Length: 171
Image (cartoon, helix red, strand yellow):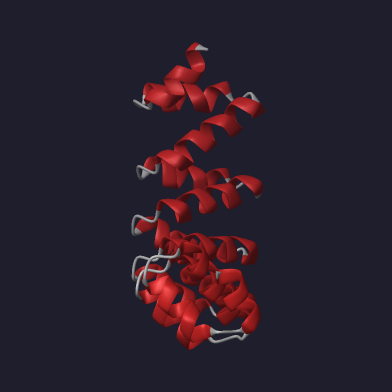
């Protein structure tokens, strides 16, 4: 039924069915709204808890490069927006914003930041984050140090109480 309604472009009927809990109708409605670039309607549905609309909206905002809108949705708790925002920030190499978000407790940002720092071979930044309590950075730092065969630094970190480093040295 939802497929036929979508083919006809019947937004009203799709909305009625989606509001009644028809997941297929919700998905078709969101796809149709996205094809029509109706961001206002997608936003309204996403804000009402429609995850299909949230996904479509986030993808449209990302395609437009609308970081302020993605950030606003992410900061409001939209996990789809958080994940997509972090991907965009990482693709742009935006260490400043990733660091700010990671420092504020965004685990997705912490992982992306760690990945970027590791890819750049920035041991100093990884060490600083690890020493500040970022466990993701600490683990990545340990892996990089182990791959480089830097037993001196690994031993120093283990001697300073880093349990993960001590575990790596025991292996």
